[in-house]
Length: 250
Image (cartoon, rainbow, N blue to C red; front, top):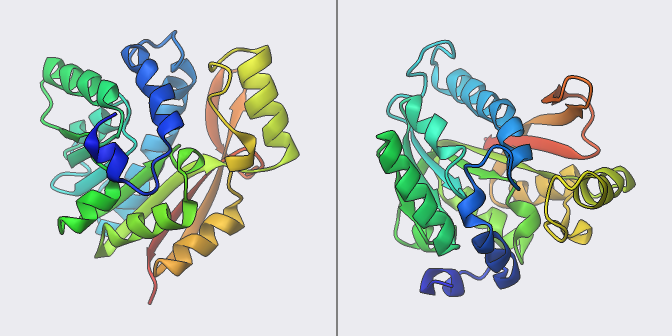
């Protein structure tokens, strides 16, 4: 584990080790990250559309995010960072797992993309004075050691007129049945132990933490999987996967 990882108060060393061990499989669409690859277009479109509405951009433009400074916290191998960069964003990818960062850097270089990947925590970046137009923490909240402290750091990382977007898992019986039993033990979409149901966060809990950081949530969006179509899509159902967006409170 890097020094940066050890210094971050919200880092869970066990979680870092788990994802570090899977680092080489990030870009395998049929490997352990297969579900993430299928989920990625939905979260990308959600971020793009929110950003375009907030900053007055055209979501149909191939450079819809041109010039926007985005930090992708818990970027892993760069599965979300890369398409954001292709849309014109200036992307900083953070991940405490050094194996993930190595994979992300190599893949970005091969793809001809300039992405600033760092094995640093968001707390360290905030302490350095960096601020961003958009702060992303997608599928990260359920892996940190201190949700409130982590969310506070995310809020602090946003510019005064910036956006905060988070995606995570709700703590419900349905999420236990589908995200733990179904995804990890029956369908084996993910390695067993990838998630700890007790660390899942309800929308109300996450919104309370966001509000404490001085931001006001304005968008709640569920995401559901359709087994017949084998694809993910936006949904009114927030019992399992959901996304939240917030901006600075008035």
